[in-house]
Image (cartoon, rainbow, N blue to C red):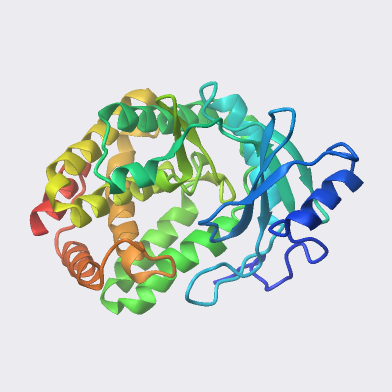
Amino acid sequence: MSEPHASPVLAGKHLDIEQPGALVAYLRRTGRIGAREQPAVRVLSGGVSNRVVLLERPSGESWVLKQALAKLRVRVDWYSSPERIHHEALGLRWLERLAPQGTITPLVFEDHEHHLLAMHAVPEPHDNWKTLLLAGHLSRDHVTQAAQLLGEIHRRAWERRGELLPIFEDRSYFESLRLEPYYGYAAEQAPAAAAFIESLIAETRDCRLTLVHGDYSPKNVLVHEGRLVLLDHEVIHWGDPAFDIGFFLTHLLSKAHHLPAHREAFADAAGLFWRVYLEAAGRVEWAAELEPRAARHTLGCLLARVAGRSQLEYLSEAERTRQREGVLALMLGAAPVRVSELIHTFVERL
């Protein structure tokens, strides 16, 4: 598989933003903060593909700075060009126009030399949605918001396709950060799934319908005053909206697997997400053909998150094995073509 941007280049070799002294000196030198300004700097945990830092200025303004890593922080070797951070900056600029007000963090600046960007921080207090879900705090309102947000992004981008397709037609980062490490690697680790996955990869490459976030996950959503704010846009591209749906449904269904006491609630939430998404996407010309691909991408992502390069850390080895076996059985049999059927069949197998 060709990976034009996937080379082990040093990311921001002249600056490591996780070193507070170096970061503050850089910001002063470039005139982005005052010469005597003393901001508070805190390294944020959980960054797999980026260094992430919160900077709180004496004025009360807060920024989140992200610097792309060339080698991702996972157990296996996984490289991607740090230049992808500028693709994320492009996504930030456009998503702020396409998404409902307040759901995207505005861009402050980007730096091409050090492969970093700064955006306004989500005000405190806020919670990471993934953390809430793993604690069993599942809100139907949050699920509805997530479905509406994704549906509106897909619909509004499609309505401006003549303008946006040329801007987001580069899918190199989606290849190196999603198709290869999620689908391609999973097919190598689970050869029985190879035919299904290879067909899904080919179908995904051929499908170019609207703007696809590519990382639509509760991990990348903060909840502030009851409202969802979407983060992490580095694999945004023009492609198949069914990938975003399958990627998100995988998180709800994997948590249904992991949290048996809340299994029925998470399964219901998955169905709710799909129904509300369709309403929000509206009468786009590709809506009628979306569901079978959404079901296939859900199966592909369910396998990828237990057999790909980026596995769900909260699943035990026994849970990974059970999810892998259950998904393979569905792939090798009569794979569901309706999302409701897939949800029911997957949960029933648990």
